[in-house]
Structures are given as C-alpha cells and as structure tokens.
Length: 395
Image (cartoon, rainbow, N blue to C red):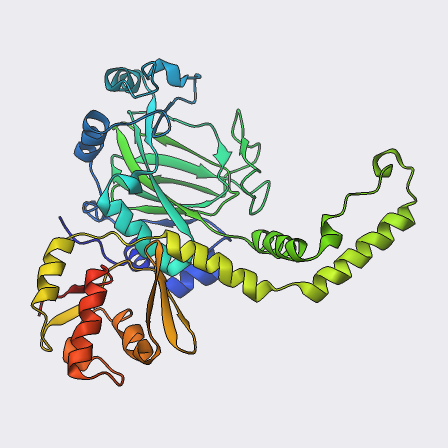
C-alpha cells in the first residue's frame, strides 16, 4: 500500500497552504485541475468499495442510496434487521441511483490516516464518505452542507455547479435543499476528473451530475468548532458556578405580565456577571483536550514496534507515530501527555525530551535532548514505543 502524504500538501498542491487559508478557507470555492489521474490512487478504488459492500457488516447508517429524481426509502435496500442487502443496492445503482458509503474513515485505513493528518492541521474532526454514481446520474438535489468539504475525484468525471450562499457559514441545524437550482447564475461551473480537487465552503449551494461514465469520489468533511460553540460553552461554564443563571424566568414573562424594563434589568445584570466570571481560555483548553483525547492515531505494525522496543539501543532510529494528536500539560512534579483516549504521566524532568520525541519524524535515540542519561533515553523511548506513540524509522 502506498503511503499517504501529509494531508494538506497532498490535497492542495500546487496551492500553498497559506494561500488556501487566506483566500479560500470559509470564503470561496476552489477547483484544482491536475491532469494527474493517479493522484489519489493510494486512497481507494471501486474494488475497495465493492469489498466494503460485499464483505463488511453494514447498516442503513453506513449506506445511503439516493436519486434526485425519486425518493428511495432505506427499506428498499435493507433487510428487516436494517443490514444492507447488497444485491438490491447494486440493482438500484443499475437503475440510476447513487451509492453513498458514510464514515469510511472507520473502514479504510488509508482514509483514516488522511483524516488524522488533516485533523493535525485544522484542529477539528474530519470524516470521509464515498459517492459512487452511475453514468449521467445525480444523487442529491441542489443543497448546501453545514461543514466544509474537499471532493477528491477517483474515477470517471462529474459536472458541478455552485451558487452564492443563501446562509453564509451555516450552523449544523441550518441545512437547505432546493427542488430546483437557485434562480441565479452559478459562481462556478466545472467538471471534476480523476486527480482533481474541489473545495466547497459550508453554505455554498451545489449540485453534481456524473457524465457519460460511472463516477467515484471521496468527500472529506471538515467538522470545525465555531465561535458560537465556544461562547455557548463559556455560558454553560458560568451557569454551573453561578446559581443566578440557573434561576427560572419569572412567571408571566410569556403573557406580557412582566414589565420589559424588569426583564431588561435582569438580563443586563446576568450579562455583567457573565463578563465578570467568563473563563474563555479555560473553556477553550477543555474543548481542545476533548478533541485531542478522542482522535487516536491509526496504529499499524505495533507488534513489530514492541519487538523493536525490546532490542532498542542508542543507535536505533525512531520517530513520532504518524498522525498522532497530543497535548502536553506541565505541572510542578510531572508532565501529563493527553492522547489516544488516555492521559499518561511522566516525571517533570523528561519534558524537553518528551516534546522532542513527539514532534520529530526521525532521530537517533542517542540524540534525544534534555538532561537524561543514555540509559534513561532508552527507557523513555521504549515506553513511548509501548504506548504506540513512537515507532522505528528506516535509516
């Protein structure tokens, strides 16, 4: 299996990351035409899709079959226990319906690694869906998504149109579908071919139709946290500590029996208390820890890593586990590492050595910086290898 390169450089080349962030991110769509059909060959294929459908336990939560010209009920392609009837799925595909495989980062290691790499850069969750459309088919009516998407064309081609947003940067509950395309000219009209990329910020209405051949593409969804979420968490944090926020609204507020000035005075008092007690940095830290601890690296070859750890020497070449997301919290007597669904404590004097090991892709054990003795260096790296945080690297 080919190694998937770092996510952003891989997805956006030849557009530099800073150009993408300053010009396109959450602002406008981006179409990258590469004339490189094999660009995404390492990620998936139609054969992988067939294997998933035929040999994986799937339910209607994993598979959606859609056609913009008709309603298809999940009961049309599932058994009584909601498991997928592969024969009927393929029959619907043959009749013009699109097959959507959802949350495929939980099924395909290549997509899991790609999502983890993207999560390192964006500090938000990523998900990967597969869309397989027959020739000349459109699965979904014109709609906008409530998260940013990166569309990676794998097979065939698809014609896309995008429109100016009706709801800029919508929140998750602000979803819209149009029976017909918006009554205004599209801001972009193009065809994706194998190796091409389309970035669509949330809120931009779009539609897509396969051309004369069957089309397969990956949609990477970027599920970003918003300032609104942070502010709601800040209010919740204050409300847990101040009973004034937990008091009931006064009886009669809904029937206009309470003077508006009374309500305004109470609200102004609460807003003042909120500003005085708000702990946005504390809440942001909690949000960051929740995100980090839940995003485990895609661990492969751990048996070989454990064998290498047992034979570790100062001349062994190692490096951080690819795709590892972590946070280091320093205290007076210890360092706490947050990652992979757990918290791991280390002695305080290992802090500089630990940080180096977790951000360096390749180094010799003897070159580990910090106050550690040669024996302590081996002990620290061996423990990190046993925790699947460091792996051996070829010379």
